[in-house]
Amino acid sequence: MCSAWWKESVVYQIYPRSFMDSNGDGVGDINGITQKLDYLKTLGIDVIWLSPVYQSPNDDNGYDISDYQAIMPEFGTMEDFDRMLSEAHKRGIKIVMDLVVNHTSDEHSWFVESRSSVDNPYRDYYIWKPGKKGEDGRETAPNNWGSFFSGPAWEYDEKTQMYFLHLFSKKQPDLNWENDKVRNEVFSMMDWWLKKGIDGFRMDVISLISKNQDFPDAPVKENSIYGDAGRYTANGPRVHEFLKEMNQKVLSKYDIMTVGEASGVTVEEAKKYASLDNSELNMVFQFEHMDLDGGETFKWNDKKIDLVELKKTLSKWQYELEGKAWNSLYWNNHDQPRIVSRLGDDTVYRERSAKMLGTCIHMMQGTPYIYQGEELGMTNAPFGGIEDFRDIESINAFRELTQNGMEAETILKYIRYKSRDNARTPFQWEDGPFAGFTTGTPWIMVNPNYKEINAKKALENPESVFYYYQKLIKLRKEKPVIVYGRYELLMEDHKALYAYTREYEGEKLLTVCNFTKESVEFELPEEFIKGTVLLSNVNRQKTEPSFALEPYEALVVIL
Ligand code: NOJ
Image (cartoon, rainbow, N blue to C red; front, top):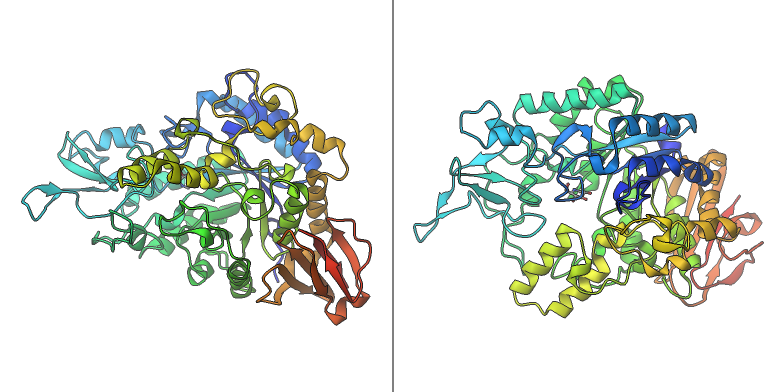
């Protein structure tokens, strides 16, 4: 298999608002990140994916951009950014920027122009449609699509008496990628950042940029009021054409890394987005394993992910992309609740289960992504009422579901478990006030478990989750089989254990992870009896032909 630095790298995601506040305003910032680069160097990561730091009115915490070439003042200045980039590079750390170009903020100058009149030169930068007559003769939105953040996906604009499309909040109007002026603006903006020396892009909801131009009504799922917009916007008719154009005009000119966030992506589509022929992107984020605990009210429930289903899904991605495309590997990001609280045990076995989950994902084929705090085993936060939440998705869902008759306590239980705010509580640096994140008042509550779970304590304890992650990263550098090996699932129907092998140029690796609180008997596959222990989260030194795996044990054996 062709080698590439982005296949051999480990990426660390920083959500700047919650990472480190250097000036006491309660909001994390760029200088805070620069201060902590040595911490990341100690961890050993290669690349930072920086969530948006651009100018934004913060309707969706920076994913609503009003100027792509300016820094949000709360986060600092362009000089601060340049200094962070050069300090990261000095330490051999690359920086990949978030590229949010499915939509802008409604405060972006393009949209301000666009909404001002039907013949403004920027009108066609966005998706405007007249309303249609409903059965009762009253005017309704152009179609029945719902926004991913609740409510309709169309907003009526008084000024020109038409509707604009917003798949996310109404302050995030969708760009019209059919317009080649839009595409060229985006490409030259990307070029500007690349010339500055950044090392790539994580592309926000890039699978949504090409809409079905008939804008048909979409089927309404059970328990929903609106049509499923994803049906006619995800992996749309021209998405691969647009990305190939982006690749030719911009990406192919630089030695960079690209990852597309691709909601609704199937393995078949991923083979096109992330083909090893380098014609579009390096890899995509798929969601199938994260959606396994979806239910009647979509993500809002407290169902547990079934291990057999999880193995089936992750293995499908491993098998199908082998030799054709490249996987990204993740459990956490700024949109997901904390994985120890979701798939591990955030009480008695917190550290052990955090290490087990890290092992399970890092030993697969693909580029691993660590989300800030994952390396400490940070957990979901004990949020109280809806007033504790800051996230627009959670707040809107609470409003819509309670209006639809769901008990407030029920929906709150689900939001507490699944809200994106679980990932967004401040990074826990130490056991002092506000976990050392800020000297001011943090913009969102600090998880009270910071006295126990924090970076300072982790750095002092050789057995911490931090040092285990450091080892996971180091092993990847030492063993090509971890990067390039072919994956094979064992015991696919086992309800407690996730076991698989990897094989590459004469090296073979076995990973086995116990996903339960119980001890589980395990028979070592015969060929591994002669193997040696490469990694263990319970200090197991050697294996027997058959033995009991301890609760949440993870073991890697190498031949
Ligand atoms: C996906 C991002 O990860 C999420 O945080 C954001 O709210 C939406 N895209 C809209 O930009």
